[in-house]
Length: 195
Length: 202
Image 1 (cartoon, rainbow over the protein chains, first blue to last red):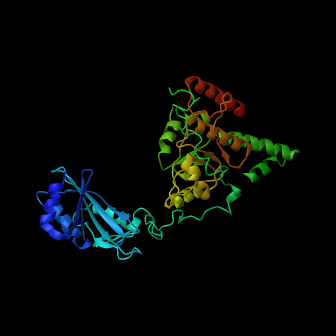
Image 2 (spheres, rainbow over the protein chains, first blue to last red; image 1 turned 60 degrees about the vertical axis):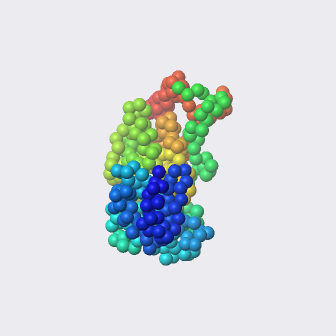
Image 3 (cartoon, rainbow over the protein chains, first blue to last red; image 1 turned 90 degrees about the vertical axis):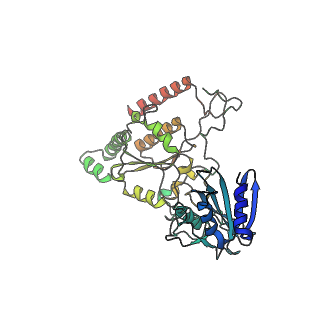
């Protein structure tokens, strides 16, 4: 659907478009972090592109790759009704130096999305005026969606009652006994019919 | 409360007996006068609304008035997932409630975190505040919530502060979980509930 757009980009930027792929009707291009803002500005303003809407901006962690993180945007044109995905790769193996230009000056809606990508992955956006955590809390250490963040690690703001519990009250059931009133017996042999 | 009971019964000759009776009276009065603070954070809230509204009618149990200030409430309904970020708020709301106070964990997330086993979620509010009754379910069926409220009323009446859990119903005929009811079943369980209310109240 956006093949023409990919060709247009390749004609305009040449070798600076590192890759152009198409899978299941979804077109994507890969650019270098240095070209990040310029390519998006072109996609927004070019008459054949007219990407007025930044659908999503997110990070992806590929721990085996170098650079380690991908930053991905999903763009949509309200007038042309076409979509494009733009990717770039940033960050070394430790997750440092993950810096890419902010798109806040291109689309205002990039504000919270970039804060989320920063919060979850530690990707920094140069030029973002207020790059704070948005989903976790300021006391949170690390970035929870990195693959090396321990899956079981929590960072409670309130000390847990375990051990010194008030009146010794703890749950009188095991971890596997959570959902006795769930609807899992729907249609099971012997269960009453649904009305 | 302890001081009040003592001053009232010291005049009498049978102190222990009088104290017990007074506590019974107090428990009976309290259990039909629950002012609740609904701490609703997630999808279980829809089930709570249906329980509070006329179809399942929480008002039958003397618990119809929600208070949106914890200082005026004595029953805290924790309805839904509690994230780590929200935990200090929940803790503070609980601390602001006046004694005596009770906590009901509504749904699997509030009871034990449910399937949210991750960095963001508190795996059960009992890690933060003491819980009197757990009502598991995702979301719990209204019958389970009614069971939970009646169990809490029992506990209030008897002064029992140990935690209780609403277990799945077992059909005595088949020995299987009964999770879906026919209208006849519902009428039967309503009749049983009303009988229980009458017994406990009378």
